[in-house]
Amino acid sequence: MKIENYSPEADLLNDRVILITGAGDGLGRAAAKACAQHGATVILLGRTAHKLEQVYDEIEALDAPQAAIYPLNLEGATQQDYQDLANTLENEFGQLNGILHSAAWLGALTPMESYDAETWFKVMQVNLNGPVQLTQACLPLMHQSETPSILFTLDDKNRAYWGAYGVSKHALSGLVKVWADELENDTPSGKRRRIRVNGINPGPTRTNLRTKAYPGELPSELPSPEEKMTRYLYLIGNDSQHISGEIIRL
Image 1 (cartoon, rainbow, N blue to C red):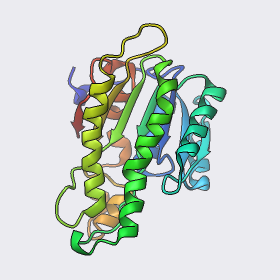
Image 2: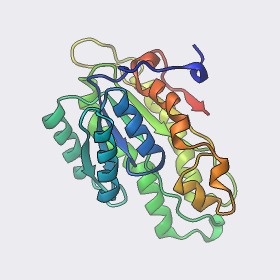
Image 3: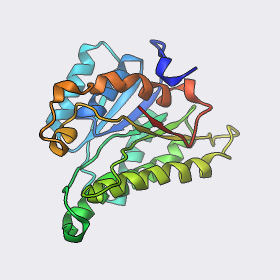
């Protein structure tokens, strides 16, 4: 089946727990609602509590499984913060079937020669270091869960003036390949499950980050985040169990 022709079943994510970063806005918000609509218990992670609360209320209105809110700013989060998150998930839910990394910070669009060091480190912390540390902390729980899947949201802006954002997204593409290869040999024996790791590049999408990067562009001419969700559901759900280490471009 081609991914563009995929149609998810209504119960695709029943009894699954999915953690979504950047869940308060854009692609993360759309993914949280889509996963909940298909039966998942969604953990809404982001830095702005009132945005997460709005998404929580929207999920409640869908008559979907009750979501959970976990405010966390990836920019300042420590290794202990991520371990505390993993411990909370294990204590409260006993499983973690999926992680969708959607949080991202644009930083500055400027020549590398004059790129501000503080901005560089902040972008790398949110876009690269945070996802790595969060995933590391959650892997033991995912190894115990059924058909686990990790999905990184990517971009291909590795060209002039995209600075730390472009470099961080390019690094995530490499991370997908490395981690998928490392986890490929894990088998469903005992309590250690094979974990799928994939990346998805949604392409131009009507988000706040896109508006900041392209202020002269008409958002109405771009597809909405909701229009991209079928492919996200495919990669986070059980129908893509045979796929790992892939970069899907929409």
